[in-house]
Image (cartoon, rainbow, N blue to C red; front, side, top):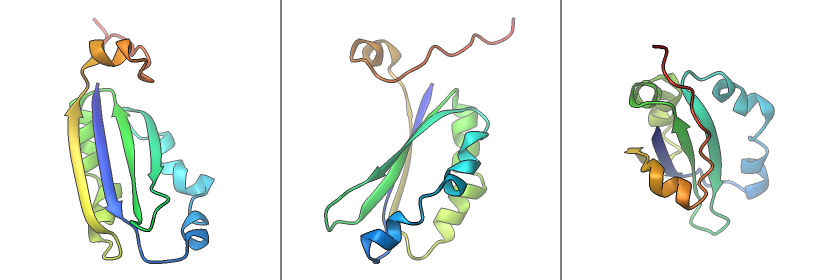
Length: 111
């Protein structure tokens, strides 16, 4: 399991306008994203205007495909998103399970 963490400073716009952008259509591309187990959407309620996401992928190949794919490419090209920071982490599963991380048991690879 691999975590992708993406953070950025969102565009300077009223919060209500920013919030209106989050619809089922916005989430739709993630529902069938290969290897994505879940995504948590992040927003900082302060004036820092930070946003982002935490993504759990089944494996590093799926995580890297996402980071190098069209969704992240459009984020990189979006000049209104500032301080874009993208990181890939391996999950320390044993410790995460001890602290009740929302990690589902992933199916074993076909033998």
